[in-house]
Image (cartoon, rainbow, N blue to C red; front, side, top):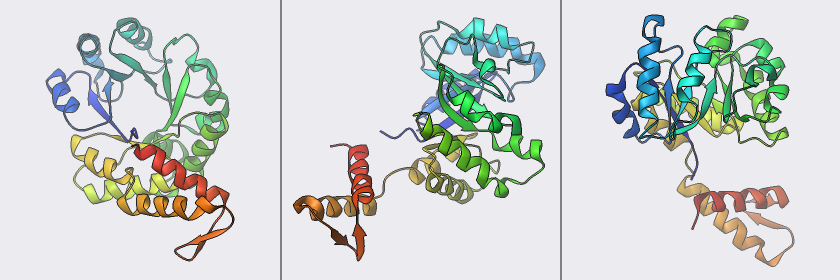
Length: 256
């Protein structure tokens, strides 16, 4: 199964945890960082630690340069439902030292992007994710102009044999079509999933990253045409070894 949608839920809103779990998101992220005001950090930490006793999720902890980071890690480490942590503003491999759990490194600054290969090589890093909002602020650009950053994360992830990266959020919560468009762009660039900040974004993201019936039909016809060996054409296109490999991958991802 493709792991497509990753849904943030504020850690200080335990009343939303069950709804998030039932949203259809492939992965839940309980958030202790940006979604939680400083005065609510302690309560959020306790609520998230309790939730990890009955539900599997990632946790976005506060950054290593904050006064909350160590307490976050102490509260959640060893909890049975902890799938791993999202580490915000990862800028060097040293930021991941001592975590001791699977980590999705959020690349949100120019320095983080510059050091992406070093971050990806850290033994605790299981994936990279793009923090597009903070990155835009850091370099003074708009989200439409971040092709280089996105492509670099895809290439670095592949070079270091990580799972494909996750694209950042769509901040407009009222436009499912925009969320879908952003997700389709991310998929074309080589991302495997997208971060969501509201349950209504989950379905557009899931659809954008799902294999379509047309893609499966093409893959089956390519594999069938190539069964006899030699060069073949499908839909007027030459099918070489890379295209045949793509067809096999699509069929394998879809499963039996």
